[in-house]
Amino acid sequence: MLNKNRVEPKEILKKLRGNGFRITPARKSIIDILSVKHDAVSLTELKKHLETRNVRADRTTIYREILFLKQQGTICEIPIGGGKKGYKICEDGHHHHLICIRCNRVEEIVLKNTLALQEKKIARQRGFQVLDHLLEFYGFCGDCQ
Image 1 (cartoon, one colour):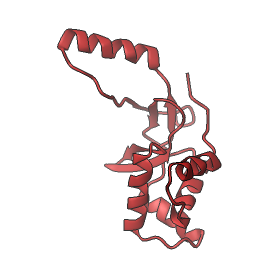
Image 2: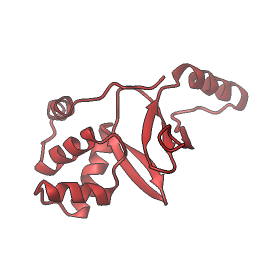
Image 3: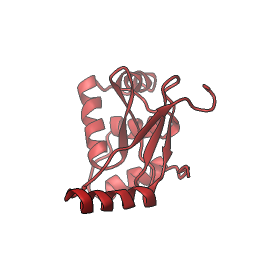
Image 4: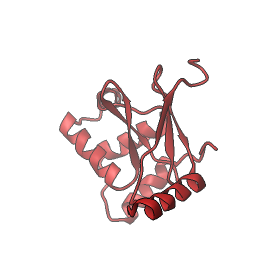
């Protein structure tokens, strides 16, 4: 089942303000840019988008904002090929990714019940306490097949 519940930038900004964080021009612009992109955006692409919006932010500032937004659970980091990482707005709930290796399109997928059972099985059989997991499926999207 695909998760199509997009999170609105206004809601993200409201949550950050409610938690006592300032909304800088770079932070707001990054959230705005990522919220309209369906695919993960690299740091280089993000810098270009910020420049077209006349938002002054060097790579260090952008990287710090990305780290901050990741820590807040606002954005997710996703491998986009070639050892690079991309970023996109996290949608509600724990999810996993379908990643097209041709066009780098990323879709979120929710597999809660199946993986919850696997985590319990791992704990029971291996004596391993699972704290979190990351699951990504690589292949070709419908447009690239």
